[in-house]
Amino acid sequence: MQINQLHPRFVGEIIGLDTSGPITPQMVEAVEAAMAKYAVCVIRDASLADEDHIRFSRAFGPLELPPAGGKRIAPELYDIGNLDPDGEIIPPKPEGAQPTDFELFHTDSPFNDLPTKWSLLLAYVTPPVGANTEYIDTRAVYEDLPQETKDRIENLSVEHDLFRALQRNGVQFGDDAMKKAYPRMAHPLVRSSASGRKALYMGWHGVGIVGWSDEDGLRLLDELYAFATQEKYIYSHQWRPGDMVIWDNRCTMHSATSFERYRYKRDMRRTTINESGPEVSAIAAMREAAD
View (cartoon, rainbow, N blue to C red):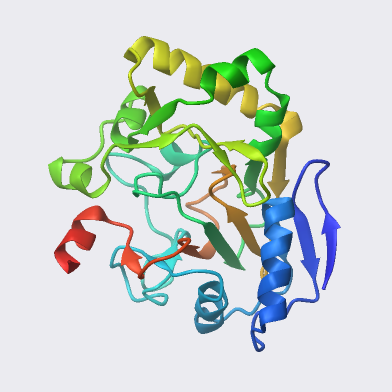
């Protein structure tokens, strides 16, 4: 393995790692160390096989299982592309939330009891232009905050609420069943990362601070979001088939960028893993039904 740093503050490009081969303790240790250092790692020329993607991911933690979907890909994978089960481009929705409504910086699955460990996104088919994924290292963001701000936010918890966040952006989406599936969840704003460095745990889905008024909480979160999304903190990954990008949801944010989604095909498949425990559904209602 060779690792090249792709951004001044984070992101390691791993060369020479075969995700289709045997997974050794030494490989696991090396990838864990790389992720602790870089928070985002790019593996070039990863195996384009669902079974290899799943097996490689499970070496680092139990899977968070996605909701049941079509049969285009393995059921353990999230379908992040724009294709239907027959491999054709999905037409625009007549109403409700659109894919572009989610093109804001976020972490995956903040509606779980504990933040998820990593997401591992693999590119099969990529558009000729656009559709980058942008990443922010919230460890670097935290370190650059004024000390007065660090002291102010040290013991705060953020309320994450997908539906309230969408409403703030003018989108009415979700019924009572959906709200039960993705409940409002509170998490500490400041947490320690795998490297021991402090990081912010936040995203556009943060809608309030526990114990604060709505107005004061949103003002603080908007200020932090504006600070974190400065260009100097952003790494924009231009995808090519065979790229697997791994990011630590506990100390990064990411966002899709736009592309001509009704013209070009995009086939992207993601696993998300937890730190420990059984493999469980990402949907709270489905977890409850399984208990």
